Image 1 (cartoon, rainbow, N blue to C red):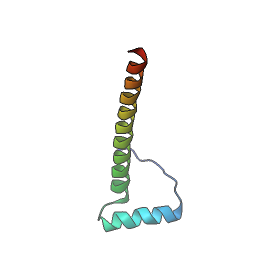
Image 2: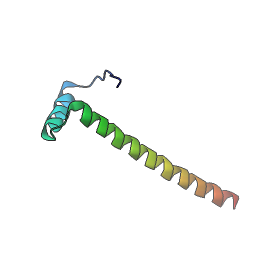
Image 3: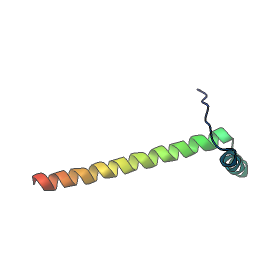
Image 4: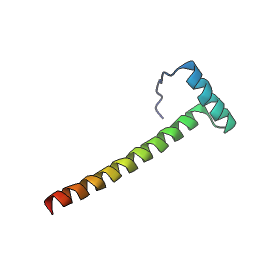
Length: 62
């Protein structure tokens, strides 16, 4: 597994660590899950935009 270096403000990291502690997860687990959730949301939004654009194009051409 690759390791990365991420820079963030101390106050934000404190919140991340507090949440990880409350959920009894490691910081890495919490950040991985947050990124997975973000990536799914972006993918869904891109699909919706693609569908909307296709409908617009169909209306223009139809």
